[in-house]
Length: 151
Length: 121
Image 1 (cartoon, rainbow over the protein chains, first blue to last red):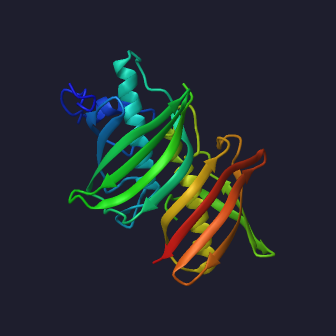
Image 2 (cartoon, rainbow over the protein chains, first blue to last red):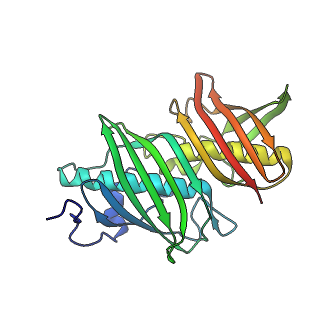
C-alpha cells in the first residue's frame, strides 16, 4: 500500500462534519470539504458563498484566499486529530508566511480546490505548502506558511 | 474596505517618508464570532489587509496583493486588549507595483512584520 493512498474512505462534504474538524466557525469559515487525506498531504475544497465575509464586489479577496489555504491545513490537522481520537479540533493560527503568491482572485460562487503538503512538524509548529486552483485547473495562489497549534 | 465597520482611522501622517497610521478595531465585529468562539483573535490575513487598504487611501488607487515574503505574526492581537493598532511602513511606487515594508504594533509591542508587493489595478 502506498503511503500516499488516501486514508479517507470517501470525501467529507457535509459542512456540519467539517465544522467539527476545524476551530474556525461561521462567519469565518473558508473551507467546506475534505477530498483526500494522507499522512502528509490533503486535498480540500471550498465553494465561495456570494455573501462570504471576505468577498468584496463579487470577488474573493486576497485575505480570503490565504485564509482558505490556512484553513485547508487546519482541516488536514483536524482530521489527523480525529483519527487519533481527539473529540474537538485544537485552536491554531498562522505564525508566519514564508511566501505567498497570488495570481488571480476567484469570483464568488466558484469552487476552489487546494492541495496541502506538510513539509515539517516540530512540537506545535507545522510548515505547510499549499496550492489553490479554480474549477478549470487554473492556479490561483500558492503559499508556504507555518501554523501554530495552541490546544 | 473589505470588512464593513471593522476599524476606524484615528490618525494618519507621514514622517521622513514613513507612513504612520493609528487604527481602532471594532472588538464587537461579527468576524470574532468565528475566529474563534470564546477566544477572539484578529486573523493574520486581516492584519495584512490593513496595510493594503491604508496604502490605497494614501495613493488613491486600488491595489491587489501579488506576493509577500517572510510575514511574521509576533503576537496575538486580542481585540479585547489590543483594539488600538499602529501601522508603520515605507512604500515605493514604481507606477505598476507598490513595494511595502512595515510593522503593526499594539501598545504591547510589535504584532506583525510584513513585506509585500501589490499591483496597481
